[in-house]
Image (tube, rainbow, N blue to C red; front, top):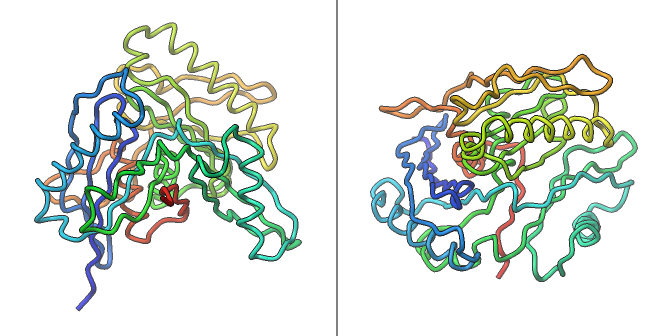
Amino acid sequence: MDMVKKVAAFDLSEAKAGVIGLAVMRLVNEPQVIAYVSRNIAVNPEMNSEELELCLLDCMEILLDDNAKHIGSSMVGLAIPGISVFTRRRSLPPVPEDKVAQIAAYEIQQQIPFALHEICLDYSVIERTDGGGYELLLAAVKAENAFPHINEIISKRRFECVDASAFALYNRMAYDGIEPGHIAFLRLNEDTFDIIITSDGKLNFTRSLPIGKKHLMEKPEENLQILTRELSRTLQYYRASPGGKYVQKMYVLGNIVNTGLVGLQLDVPGSSGIIIEEYKLKRLIEMPGMTETPEMAVVMGLGLRLCGLSLLNINLKSKK
């Protein structure tokens, strides 16, 4: 008999906008979602990080209790907003493997204005170079944004990881199968915008913007112009960065109805421009009684990661 693995994935990437998602997934031979909930919660924009965490923990505890029959002793993971996470790609020359973590921590510390004890950090080796060097993706978040009190409500379960929404998005796209070349994926959230760019299927770049669906609804013309300008700048920056080239395709997913994003053309110096296309999932995860939609990409990507079906496994869990 196959061993069943069960996991509980919480999407907190839109928590500040008052939305929290939970997917309970099991893995036998293929992943299957056995429970999915998206809940609105009462959050105050004036809340500090500790107050927000306590509010979210209360909601998570309720969701855990309400879905106890599905969750049991499942591993639990969180996806936090990509905009709160610092990421950089770095190249390392050939060094002993046991020195990579130390060098990665040093590289991160040079880039952010916080001491090491104030942050949670991790890295992933994207690839090894022909000369024996390393291509690293570095990530860090302030410890106060990595839910340090989470163990207080999941003591009977295994708290596995804190993921970033951009990384979870990548893992969901990778499960779908990413076409060759330099491909950009955009996820429109309620108050933020995640951007990932892949190179032949490998994550090469991430960025998050403080513009979301609510901004596009409040001031459509003004904020769409701002977003268009920032996307064009992102593509230019990527083109000039190590390993970067012209992005060949750009897909958008999320709650994109009436946003004007699909069909939008971005002007990038040196290229003929790029038109944003709506992304359609190709490899749906089974959800009895429901159909997976692109809006679920982050929580599903986190679930895949918890099931051991991900390509990128950066963990920003607090060590305290």
